[in-house]
Length: 217
Image (cartoon, rainbow, N blue to C red; front, side):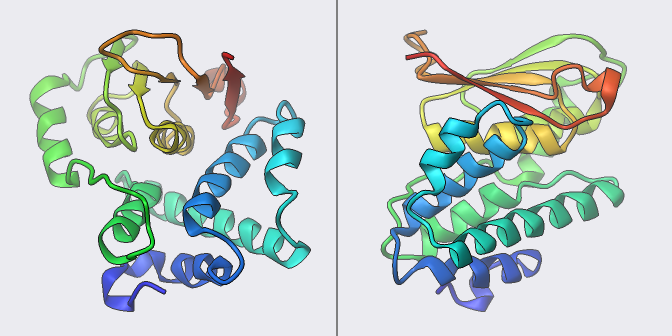
């Protein structure tokens, strides 16, 4: 398990639940499966085959733990938004695993929050509204979250080569009430996406958080 000092305070319960999977599963796979399960849950019944395929390797108690992990994330998002800020709990935990868990195959660190805020202040006008903004290397979506914090109401097109990064971006956009799309492909080559995700379609109409998954194979 990651040491307590290596995990942000708000993620300590999440960390304890997550490492309950260590003895029976590869934690890299568990993290990816958790992202997939959340996306399926936010798909509002549109991704049942993907959901059932993802969870079939887990016991009933482990599925309950996945639900608790999801619940912990929603609490973190809600607390941050109530405080008038943005947060990236999945990206933060991903970085904790990258730097402190020897068995992790993760290998990325994302732009620090303070730098994201500075870059957003330099590039986004608070009066911008209804614009389409491209993010060609989204990571966990932090620059979009910072940009949205400055000026809400824009539409974001996000891209990344890493499937887990794309999933983290979509989940972050979803819970920050941001409309956009995320494409898993090489934005330099502009090749065909492996899959795409659309967040909060028609959120303005029904105030319902959602993620729609499109398999482009």
